[in-house]
Image (cartoon, one colour):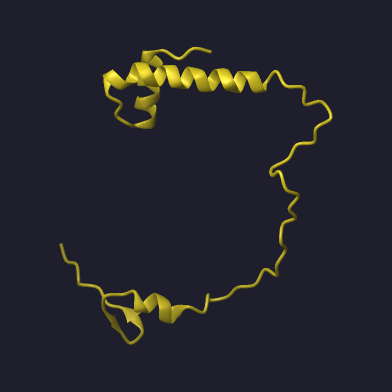
Length: 95
């Protein structure tokens, strides 16, 4: 699949990013190369290969589902510019 300059402009618009017109032609070539490589992967024979999410077999760690407060209130409050009675102090906002 070949990507042209207008497709790059359309993708940029959808992604809400600005790509200078001078860069669009080079980017079209790069994207075409990536898509050609992905098409090559489709030619591989994967018959009998089990789907996997990692090259290393990993079992998910099961833990007890328990509610906790995180036990780090002091660390959080230490980051505040101002505190009062263990709570954040913020300026009053009136419009």
